[in-house]
Amino acid sequence: MIVLITHESPRRNKLQQFLMQRGYRVAVPNHREEVVPFVIEMKPQVIVLDLYVAEPSGIEVLRQLRSEGFKGRVVVLAGVSNSPLIPQAFQLGVDQVVGVCQATESDIACEQVDCAIRAALRQQISQRAQELWHERGKPHGKDHEIWLEAEQEVIRLP
Image 1 (spheres, one colour):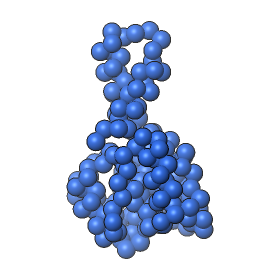
Image 2: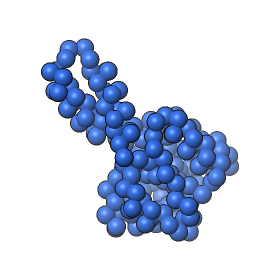
Image 3: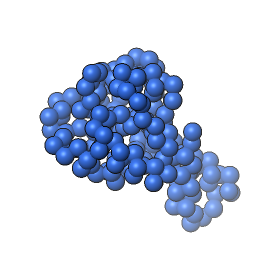
């Protein structure tokens, strides 16, 4: 499951629709004040966190999540105005950063976010692919097929 955290409705709607079409289960907290308890309760594999969020800030949300024991993967959406926060975000365990432009809220490279999520989940996908490969008797020439199957299983996990 993916939890999507952004205050920009057009961006959130576009990204949520795109990710759901790709097979992800996507959840969005109702209010930004509920973000931390929502994430802790939902236990997502990945959160997509817009660093532009305020009250609390994206960095503060990340800090609170880590202090509450959240160990999931994190993909952040960041732009030029919040690029000074990126080193701090990495110190808090961010896995991937996707560049976005604040001026055009709905203009987001959904494909890049999808790739960042898959990269963040790469270790889990690799582990599952190896399990499938062994379960099937180490078939020659089926690596790509098995990887894609593992990717789909990991993405669709509750």
